[in-house]
Length: 127
Image (cartoon, rainbow, N blue to C red; front, side, top):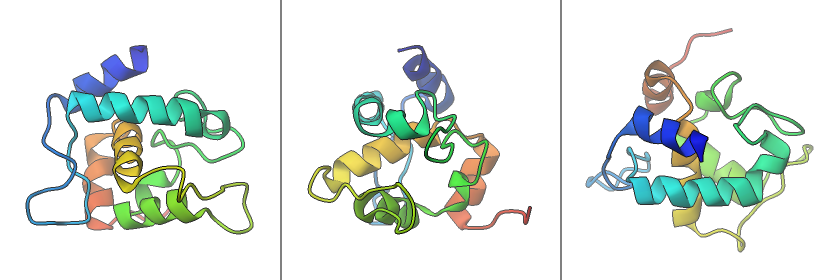
């Protein structure tokens, strides 16, 4: 639960998952959505990506690696359909799109404001 408290400090009380324009971008989430994302992450993602997103079998999702280089549609696709040639399996049929958006909101809260801004635009510095 300590991670959830940090998530709330980072995001505060936010808006709904999707901005009103119907954009595919995930907006800042409410505390309820973040709590849902935390549960889903703990049950579905943490074994491979680490309890705090630090990485394990799967890459880190906490902003220390490249996860923030992927726009939301790419993150959704990876979560729903998996990534061939890697241990990442798809969760289509196991997670709803709303649940996927909740878990993405949860791990995006670990990123810096600068990483979230660059991820939102798809612009990031080359390594």
